[in-house]
Amino acid sequence: MIRAAATAVTEPHRRRESFDSVATLYDRYRPGYPSAVLADVFASANIGAGSRVLEIGCGTGQLSVPLAEHGMELVAIELGPSLAAIARLNLSGFSNARVETASFEEWPVPPEAFDAVVCATAFHWLDPDVRFAKSAQALRAGGALAIVHTHQVSGGTEGFSPDSQKYYVKWGLSNDPFFEPTAPADAPTMYAELDHRSEFVCVQRHRFEAPVRFTSESYVGLLGTDSLILALDETSRNGFLADIAQLIESGYGGELSRHYLYEVVVACTPK
Image (cartoon, rainbow, N blue to C red; front, side, top):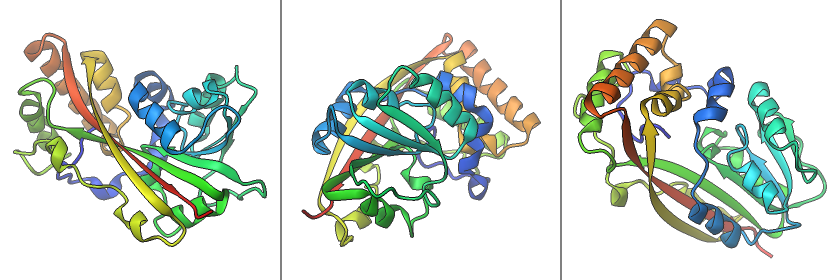
C-alpha cells in the first residue's frame, strides 16, 4: 500500500506475518476506505443488512467495522493474533460480527455458505493456488467475491516522491534512485486471471481515486506498518523513518498529501 512499484532490494523478504508485530500502529495509522469505495463494494457484491459475509485478512477492522455497521452477519479471519485481538475490540459493540484467528489457507470452510467473500488490501498475500478456489467454495450459488486493492499513484504533494526516494536507496529499500509512482491510468489491472476462472462469472472492475492527507507523525506511523520497511533491521528502520520525518518537517511544513487509486474487483459464482 505504501509504495506501488519501487525496485526493492528487500522485496523477497516481505512477510505477511510482519504486520502483527506492529498491530497497535496498524490500528492507529492504517486508514479506512473512502465512502465511494465502500458503497461500490456493497452494491457490486449485492450485500447489505442481513447478508452473511466472510472477510479475509481483516487487520484491525478497517473494512470490518463498516460491514458490521451496515448490519451484515460478519465472520472475519485474521492471521495475526495481535491484529485479531484489536479487531475484536473494535467490533465488540456488534453482536453480528466475530473474528477468528487463522490463515485463510488453513481455515475450515463451514457448511453454511456465505453471500459474499470480501478482502481489502490483503488478497495478494494469499496462496495463488488456493485463494480463488477456496473463496468460491465458501460462497453460495450467485454469491460474490469482492476484492479491494490499493495502489499508490502519482499525484499528491509535488516533489515529495523524488525527495523521499533517496532515502529508500540510502537504507537499502530500493536500488532505483529515479523511481516515481505510476500514473493512475497506468496502474496494473489486478487479478486478471479471474476472467478465466471457471468458478466465477460476471467480473466487474471499478476504480476510484482519492488523496489522503498526512502529518509527519501519521505518515511515518503508516510507513512503520509497511512490510517492506518492517523487513529492515531495527537500526536501519529507525534511521529511515527519522529521515522521512525530518524531510516532511523541514521541506514540507510538517504535512503532505499522497494519492491513492482503489481498485474494486467483484466476481460472482454461477447461479
